[in-house]
Length: 134
Image (cartoon, rainbow, N blue to C red):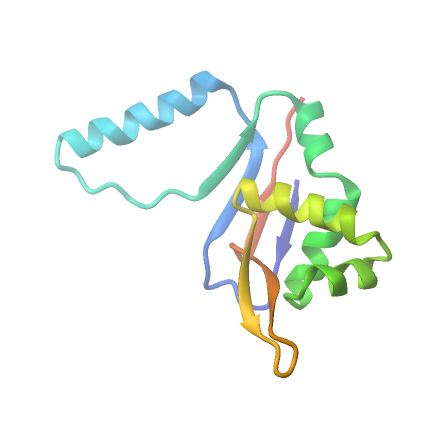
C-alpha cells in the first residue's frame, strides 16, 4: 500500500483500490438504506475501484505516479510538467486527460500576464491512498 501525501492534509482523500462490482453496489445499497431511514450519511472517502489488478497497474503507471508527485509539489502547466518530468508534452497531456477523467487531477485557467491564459493542473485530493490485493 502506497500513500502519497502533501504538506496540507486538510483537503479530501482519494482511495484507489481493487474492488468488485458487487462490492460497489453493496456500498451504494448500504448508503441508500441509511438515507431512506433518514439516518445521517457520513461523507465517504472518494474511491476509484478496479476489478482487475492489471488494469490498476496499467492505469497507475510509474510515469503517472511520478507526474502525480510532481503536481503535488507544485501545480503547473502541462508544458512545465513535461519539461520537469523529461517527457513529451503529448504523453503528459494524455496522462493528465486520463487522470482528470477519473477525478485525480483537475485543470483550471489562470491569467499569464502578457501571454493570455494558460491551464494549471492540480490534484483534487491531498491524500491519495493506493491499495491492492491479489
